[in-house]
Amino acid sequence: MAQIFHMAPAERWRTWPQGQDYLPAEYAADGFIHCTRGEELMLQVANSFYRAQPGDFVLLVIEADLLAAPVRWERSADHLAAEFPHIYGPINRAAVVAERLMLRDTSGDFIGIVAG
Image (cartoon, rainbow, N blue to C red; front, side):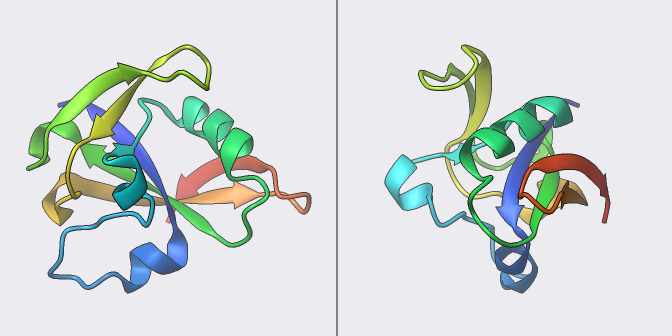
């Protein structure tokens, strides 16, 4: 099974009702959930788009084959010219196989990912 990764504000993820599929706040505007295919790429994305956003973040490790919603690999027009997995629907909890803490330094840079 292929693992993909989604970055979520820790507070939002941890307080999301257990019986409900997860949707990030940006889903309504974007129409899909942004993901990456590797931790290093996720750190690059985090530092490009979320560095100025305060708070703790978690990395959700998702088994793509367990998702109820479809995943499409699409090229991003604004970052790294790479293909990214986009989830077109909510993340069902059964597909989330791990949660990891995204580490930051005092300047706000994302510097690593550890088991949570």
